[in-house]
Length: 66
Picture 1 (cartoon, rainbow, N blue to C red):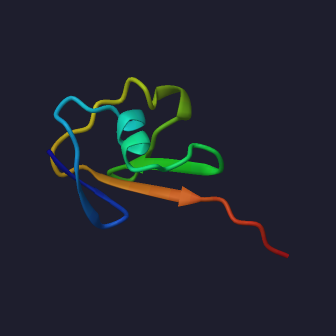
Picture 2: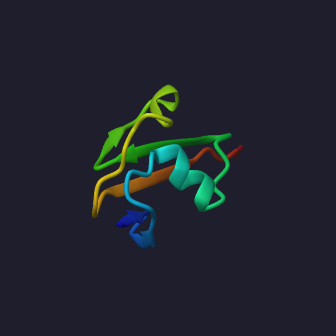
């Protein structure tokens, strides 16, 4: 199944969860927030949130600045 992470197409298995996809893509959970179709998904729901074909996933990384 095809989804998009930050506008980049990615293939993942059917019935994948958000947590599965992040692990597959090597995206560490620390310091990030994730939205699916512009709706933020709480970290506690990553393991139960099933992805759908063509979902638009946005990964936002916290950065330090000064």
